[in-house]
Image (tube, rainbow, N blue to C red; front, side, top):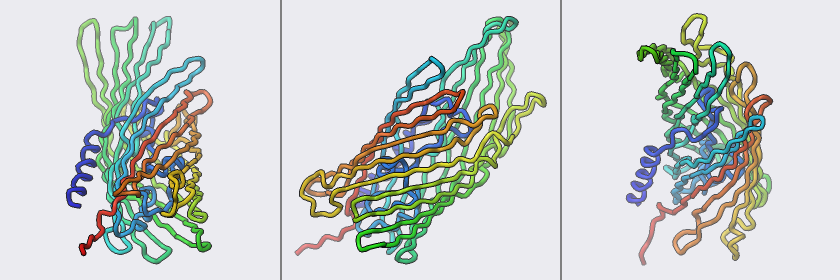
Length: 428
């Protein structure tokens, strides 16, 4: 058992070191702290990311830490996920495609004491990654081409605890270390000018993140269960410094001039709220719905003020983000008496809509509409029939009038290892 625990920690450490910086190619990742990541795991991905009211002892659900108390005393859960996606970008009659694959998450969970479950792992928070150019022509200045590039993102390694206070009531908390680097560059090229200014915006985040959760489990009938959940994320200043470096180049004299602007307390983590419920019918059909609100609208972002020639914090660039998800999970025979393999298989679908958390030139950014479907395939062998391979597909459309439209098809593959590591064996 010790060797298995060490192996899991080594896998988590390797995954952390190999974390993909910028798991996106969206030009919208240049705003705010990037494209906010889906923080759900294997089961939730097939249900389009629901989780506040989900409570299963055989699945890790980091969206609500109160769910950790459902893990039984013999079980060790370990879940890791990968994804691959194809995105189509449309602007007018122009269309471009981009492909990418990335490591998503690695999490684990086990029972520490009676009524107390523990979870740990690495999760994404946001992704930055884009590379595009814009060309304009003027009779005076000639042709101006600006190249926009960005990379990086924010990630979190966490430790969570869930405690069942009463038979129906559980509470929990996730404590995370939040870190990452974000870099954005605007590089101009003017056909008739000898002077150019390249601007690079960069920041490094090293901070913490606290999320609290509660769940109430109520048996409606002998075989039906209603679970109500709520979460709260603590908002605070990330205490990071943002810099803007301006590199001036003169092609005639071959001289460069560098100016660095800086601003303290550049980014914040907003207060976030969420509520959800699930209804498990006869142990076979699970129906769930979530709503979340992130208070980005109260926060500032660093921008360059051309009139005062200063790099400063400004309000009005962000807005509150709202998200609604619904999902369904069905298994023909949830017990151990199933005779056919397909009776063990879980079938999942989900849908959701999310508003943007940033403004673009004074207008709302694009909203996202998404749908998903997936299956959970039990891994059956002589030693273990509790582990599961989860495969899901998601289509997401990001659109707003006058802006680039994105259509993304994403494949998620997750493996949940579910073993009875803590079973005590006896010898006759």
